Image (cartoon, rainbow, N blue to C red; front, side):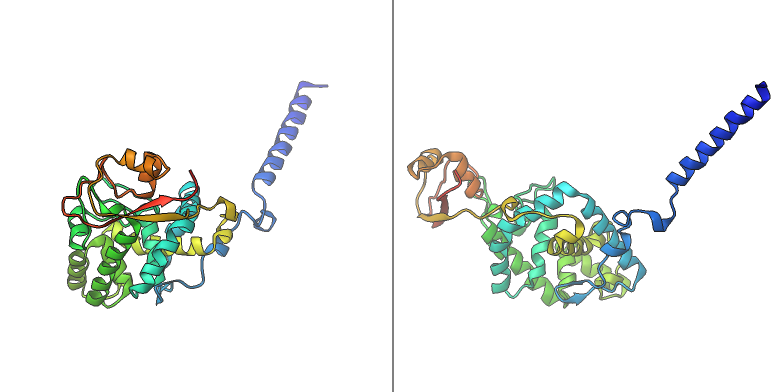
Length: 299
């Protein structure tokens, strides 16, 4: 076979192979696995926070919600953990919100604030609701080196409720009340005056505050419809509330390790169930009444 003929055959084979690769890599859209083309199916037709409609007809509003949905759908670890922790935290949070007349959607604010753990921010905010020390004290919580009630879920939820009620009275909407939890009442109010707008979705705020309500909306949508977004968890995978007994203490406890042993548990278990105890002892010179929870199982 002549050299030119051999080269021609080789080029023909290479060209044909290239077409095959191209055809494989660039399948027509109707040939693509529908499971991969989920973009049009995950976005909700409507959205609202605390019954207040989110105007998805506004292009930037729709895109901002889309951003937070995409981010949290793909933050698999943190979203899965939030769903697991919610099974334990929401039964504590929900009745307190209801008792105070706060919409149930505010529980998702706690999710984006802390992931439903007693987080510590670089600025010094602590607990599930991320209170700063002075703000916590203003809301009636004890904060010192011995006791820090920002770590008490029941008391910190009550404190958060008092904030939401004041903010709602000031701004007139739950959406702005939620936004102000991040941007501050004064900060949000200042921008409302400057921009002459009274709707959260019409305000240009700092990036964090602009994303804030949309993050709540995204986590609400995902956590209410986990299977739709690929988060299918069995009941046994969720974190549960352990049964406890409550002990009233109105005097100083010099050694919490000894106290724990006397209750049939250890120091670690005592602190896990009472994270507001911040020292190795509980000083109580004023004989204040504290309630300490002792688990009945799970240790």
